[in-house]
Length: 295
Image 1: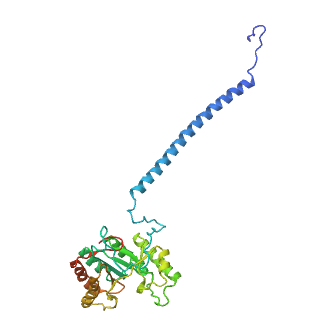
Image 2: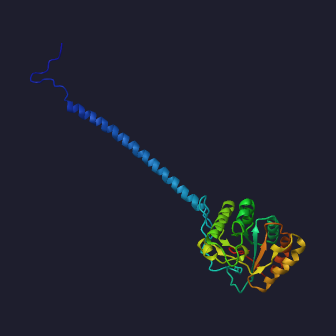
């Protein structure tokens, strides 16, 4: 038998608004849970990103390049310091000493790398002397391993143009041509050794038309005060004493810069003279230096 409601009361169906409120309440609960999950996920992601950035910054800090040497990157060459005004013809003094106190001498080698470069490096290594090598871009690009060895042995690399074409002394350098030559060589050295040279020696010592171009490229021009003319010597070691005698002219100078060659062909006479040149200067109290570090 069906139950009969008490007198005065009638059974009313649940109102639609009450059902809707219940349904809405349940949906908000789900939204709240979802929002909480999203917040947690966002916190985890942000934390992970912060940790990665922090680790990367620490990694860069641990590999900071020493002062005075810019850090190379894959697509950008390091920047050079402010270039010197005018051409340099004297060796730098020993750091911490005045120019008048300690005589210094800078050995410089042009036109390499070449056949005689390994022998030159061997003599310098046995003597414990560092030198500056002004390399030709075409040869540097062809022998990147030799450039890395020069740098690994503690020597300095300089730019000697890409092709070693010498302009006439009267006309001087074409600015556009010289700019291309030095930039190609700088890039070749950078690609081979990870170092961007900041020193430039013009072939033939021609500086007319070069100063504005090299200054814009942040190059310092390095010339010489003693020309051994070893480039004209026949490729035989018996001519070594002649080159040694010519190099000895610098013993009358306080800070000579000696011009020698390790390329492109056979420089047997230069190799034969080198040990004697080193002994001559060392016995007279000279310190061997390069243009960015003491020897």
